[in-house]
Length: 136
Image (cartoon, rainbow, N blue to C red):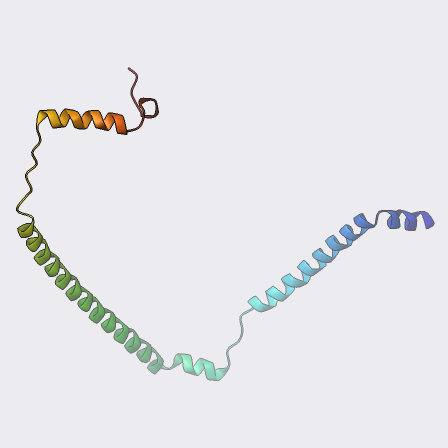
């Protein structure tokens, strides 16, 4: 018996782990029985049964759904109207912008200026080693 007590005291970490494992199993078993009790159907009182069976509750629910549906349809119509008015304002704005930009500025581009532009882009751009290029 003394050797068993000495063994348990020298390996206290293992003893605590085993006790924790056993405690977890016990808690899990108790938890399942409580869950099974909760899952059992609860019997309704007779007053509640009468309430459910009454047809006016169904009619109230139906009328509530109808009111909600009508409100949603009204909001949908309003949204469509706002969309149409926004479309009209965009169309008006686009016709105005085409009128103001109909006069395009003339660019005097000659062959010499185009070549100079290419040269400057090579000078000021990324080095050739850092640009992608295809090797065929």
